[in-house]
Length: 440
Image (cartoon, rainbow, N blue to C red; front, side):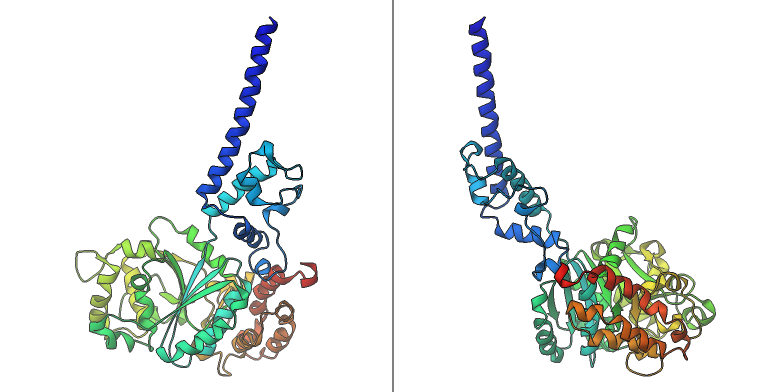
């Protein structure tokens, strides 16, 4: 009987040792599969994630996995953890924690941080306006941003100098592109509506490696994180390829329903100043049209549309998009007016109910209202963000002076409802910058 017990004990001991060895080899294979090397880069990524992105990169907080809450702090050397069997580790290193760290770092390797792609087209004297728009995107956003800036050649040097001066933020990357149209019709496309405006139509064909993209006009200001409009991509159904806001909320003052000489989407058309796109779907889709019974892809439909309607369109590329989605309404996701708030929503009295309830999410200063005195409420917000620096204290302190400036605009229809201009802005500042630097 004792002989049998000895055999059982010996088998259990061998099984236990085999199990330890298996765990050791699993940790090694995880590290090799993740690319090998030490732990510092991954620890930095973990720190960036834990700190919410922007603050951690700027050195205001965030801890790597070895310092996670509840940890013993004994997993001191990643390479030691990965390359030594657990039963041979020094006494001040916790093998259990090291195994957990290997799995954690491996998961970080295969789950890269998602970038949000933002595109803008700048021609003429649009440098300052574009830089203010980009600043508003950076100030509140959580995830890293990738800017795609299409600009005339003479603007490239200025953009590079200004953007490189922001490189300390480490929250964005950018690429500068020349203005590019199909060579056989370049002159016709470039003069359509405004210089370079129709460039946006060709973004799915130029940025072939980009899956999804947010296009905005230069006169856009983000009053809440870009992350929030980016998240609307997840609300697309299987047929939707793009999202825009209605051109008007009130049909009695609508332009398309009163004056358009071409088809347009819905009751009042859509405005393309803020356009969220799933460009992979756009490139794959075959569009119904009124030119042929054959459905055409994005790259094949643009020129025929222009040739047919060029004498009947007023707003250039926006009109072409309206025609396209008139024939393919199932492909468009329509978001509320607060995501593209323009003077038309208040110039004759407030007509954007969502903005009245929750505030303005994205401000669109078309009609040149940032640069004249016709709509001082819009100009006040623009100047506040233009003059704001990236210092946390400066961002937190912009609200009170802005509210005082907005109170001076109550003689206008838009100024009478000035609180909707700062309602969401105040929430964004509070959510992103409520904690003082000393407490971070």
